[in-house]
Each structure stands twice: as structure tokens, then as C-alpha cells.
Length: 129
Length: 359
Image 1 (cartoon, rainbow over the protein chains, first blue to last red):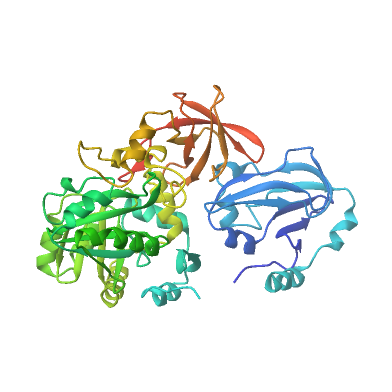
Image 2: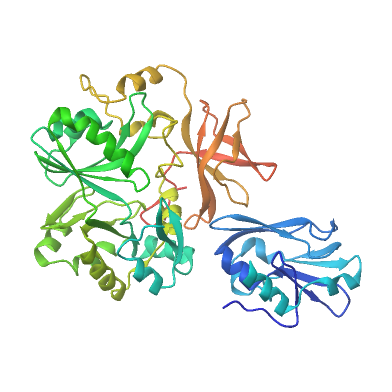
């Protein structure tokens, strides 16, 4: 079974969001998503400084099987990207919520996070899909 | 309703992810597709390929019939058990299927054809067989299990009846031996040494269990695809089909244009040979990313083309592809990936074989 940590927020499009102490957010893809994709072989994170709208396609993860878009769960500006993933995309399979994080953003509006799903809501959305 | 092979229960027991492949519910992967790929390059893996179809041909004029039917020349089959890869062509030279033909004796040859094309192939073969008094017998009672990798042969030989094991161990590449209904061929679709074993379904289930206990890794269609792509082998329906000829598909080497042999499609091929036609090349992506089927290819000269099979080569740790392109000698090109043109190098496949990268 997939792991869905309680302390994170989620988008239906399979991204997770963690709010950091300084108000920035860290974003990655869920355990369910990495498992469905299979072995990842290429990750393209959004460029630094890019301003993203909520729901905007901004990154790509490619498994041995196919390429999939990753979407910005909320609006904001990209302030960091996980460089380790370009050399070792498999980290995203083994540690999707830890070392496999994809990028960090400064939210356009901190309250937007409240509009995302909680763990139970995400699990339900996966089960209903 | 998808068809199931005799090994379907085994796949489910192992937690395989199952997909529709040519009307069959087949395993795409068991756990990690990359691990399955590496197992075949470094040790031994096994593939349920019982969806493929065995067709036995009987009759005194079978060799003469196959000489007319196939684009490669069965005259090359001189010793019993010898195998030959060939295309099956339409009159206009387009590819109906690719297959392996095994010579058993002068009145008995065996074909192994693709699952998705088997019905059409059998109809085509039967349509032409009558004139040669050849009987076409589709063997749905038989399945095929491929065991591939540097350790595959030794492990299989340990499980075969001793006499057959000795015969198998002595086989040259692209040769087969048999005892009763157990048929062992030193052929494959991975670029590694190994066997493809044809036998009644129940026998293959038994063998699968023994191989599993002996440490052979079950591998799905996903690993089969990356292995064959690295080995530079075409996949029917993707790299060639009824819209192209072997000359446009990297299969000129399988055409035996021996003087005087009149096979189906020959006239069209000879006609095309005199014209400038597209051809197949191998591509290696210079940077990061993954080449995929149907991505456009362009050259500085203006020549263009399209990827027919692409992916990530786990042994190479690079992305590779087979592409069909307009005639050009250029060694560099660009491939359009999500709207951006990325540099790629033109290579002659194979990219990897026998456990080693060749680039």
C-alpha cells in the first residue's frame, strides 16, 4: 500500500506540499504516483525564479514507461530545485517525501495551501479514480 | 475478455502488473522493470511468451513453399534444427510479420509468429500453401518460455532431461533440438545468450516453477522492450508494419535476393532498391531526457524522420531510439522533445549486447 503522511497537503494531480517554518513550501510527487509510474529515469524540475500559476504544468518525470507532467499545486515563485534528481532520479522512487523532493516555492498567497487535500482526502481521491 | 496464458496464475501470485498486449493479459513488470532488465544482462531472466504462436508446416514440398513465401532464403537451413529470421511480405513488399522458421526435416518446418498478427498470418500462409500441398497446423496446444541471460543456458540445462540437456549444451547460436514435444532453441529477443523453449502449456508451468526456484528472475514485457531496443531488434507493429518494406525498416540484411528465387514481394523490393527510400537508423540522445516513439527527427540538410521505438537503455544509462529517416549520411540530428529540439547522434544498432554497452 502507498504511504500518505498525515502532516502533508496534497493535490489531486499527485503532488504533495509541505509548509516550512519560514513560510516557503516544498513540493514533490506522492508515493502512489511514483509507484504507478515505475522506475524513474529522468526528472526535469522547474527553473529558478519561474512564477507558476496553480495547476500549471511545470515539471516532468519520466519512467522507463512514459513521461508525465507535474503541476504546481498552488501559485508561487520557484526558489530552489532538487539538483540531486538529475543525476539520480531513482531517489524519487525510494524516498518520495524526503530526499526525492522536487522544488521549493514562495507561495503567492500562504492561505492557498488550505485549499489542498489532506491525507485522507488524497487517499479518497486515489481510491475513487 | 482478454486471453490468459497457462502462466497467468503464476504472474498473479508474483504480484505482476498485467496489461492488454495484443488481446492477451500479460505481465508488464513484476516489481522493478530496471532490476528485471539488469537480471537478464548479468544473470538470468525468464519471459512468458506463450501468446506467440507456433505454426507447423507439413508436406514434401514445404521447403519449396517457404522459398516462395519468405523474404529470407530457407536454402540457408542445411542441418535439422537450424533457425532463420525472416519477414513475411505482401506482394507490394510491405511487412505482414516477422518470424523465425526452424528446419526440422524435409517435410516438417516450424514457424513462430507474433501474437497480434497470428490470425492474419495463418490465413495468408494457408492461402498460399495449397498450391504446394503443404498442411498448415496452428499449435495452440504449445506455449513458449524464453530464458535469457549469461547464466540462462546452464540453469535450463540443469532442469532438462539429461539427453536433451546434452544436445542443448552443444547447440550453436540460432539452432534448436528436441525430444518429444520439448523443443529447445538457442534464440531470443534480448541480445543475450539463452533459450526459447516450446512445450505443452502444463510442461512450461512446471518448468517456470523450477526456474523460479533456481533463481531465474521473472521479467515482464517492459524489460523485454528495453532489452530488445538496446539489442537493436525491431518490434513488429512499431518499427515495421504493413505500411513499410524491410528496406525502410533496417531489415535489408534479412532479404535474400538470390538470383532466380521468386518470393512474394521480391519485384516490389527490387523496384524500391532502385529509388531513394527512407531507412532505419539508431539514435543516441546526447543530453538528458528520454526519446519516445513518434518524436520528430530533423537533420541540418533538411532531411526529416520519426522515431519508431525509443526509450531509456538501462545498460547504457542513456536514451536510445530506432528511427525511420529520409536518405542522408549525416551523423548528427535533432529530436523534438516536448517542443524543444535536442541533439542526438546517429548510430548503427545494436547499442548493447552480451552484457556490454557497444557505444
